[in-house]
Image 1 (cartoon, rainbow, N blue to C red):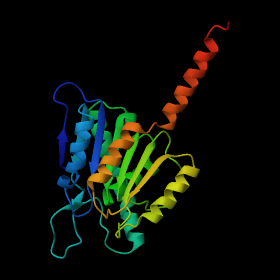
Image 2 (image 1 turned 45 degrees about the vertical axis):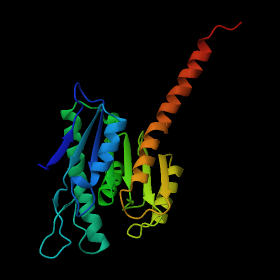
Image 3 (image 1 turned 90 degrees about the vertical axis):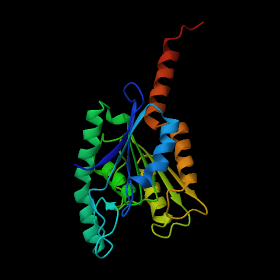
Length: 233
């Protein structure tokens, strides 16, 4: 089983679950600044920071850190390994959600770089896995074919990111919007391929202020029902 660092509320059951996925060649320490920001904003949340599924293999002779899947070889090979990694991530997320008795709507995925790519692909492949995803410095490995239902997607990217340039991500975001997705995309200037504090703060703001379309629809319907039932004078 993948090793993970887990932070739980000091007392009582958690009311949210965040699963945070680091980038290739890193470890759980990379996600600690995001975990700390989430803990400050949501002290009742559970935070799970798992290690990647396998040792990082891009350094000859072996290097420190982990990866979710190997990025060696051509694009087709990398895409195939990404697809193969998705079921393991789904199982990991579901295992923690079940352990903490958390419904899928209260689960959020956060990822940086390869972790973000994997999180976005998991939400494309599996409905009712998580209600939100925070993707930092990520990308869509495949052109999105549908909008995940009742899922809020927050894309956060540095404008100076040379490793995964932002234009392709914005094009995918526009496609998802046209398909009816709940999606935000923030591209910040003077930020490269990094889990930058400004990106984290923007993510916290999106979590605080963004109203998912599902909740908006429910509020509109409730208001309409209340108006219909009010006595007419």
